Amino acid sequence: MQPQIEDLAKILKVLGDPNRLGIVMSIGKSSRSVTELIDATGLSQTLVSFHLRVLRDAEIVKTERGGPFIYYSLSMPVLLDIITELSNTINLNK
Figure 1: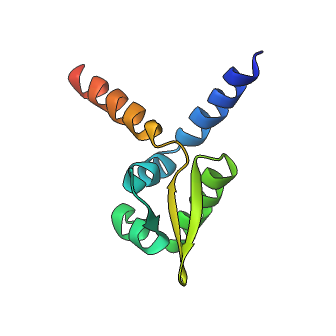
Figure 2: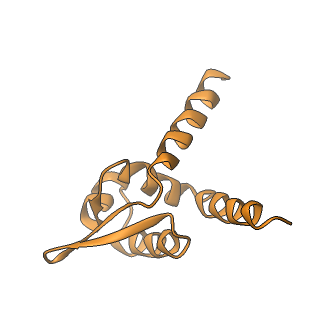
């Protein structure tokens, strides 16, 4: 199988978890701290941190330190456009 297909399958598998997808959508095209993501998703700190680690390992999010905080942003901001378009398509078909 082609490496690009395997890489895409890995990303889709990681995003297949509703909590991780919600985190990605909460990050949007900006950067967010863990606290902001906890507030946006309603998940516990433990769950947000766990899912951010998975997203970071899959290279879907990247980190940047800002003072005492670590901020998360999408490695590929276009991913949000794809998710939004897919979501809109699904909603139109209902």
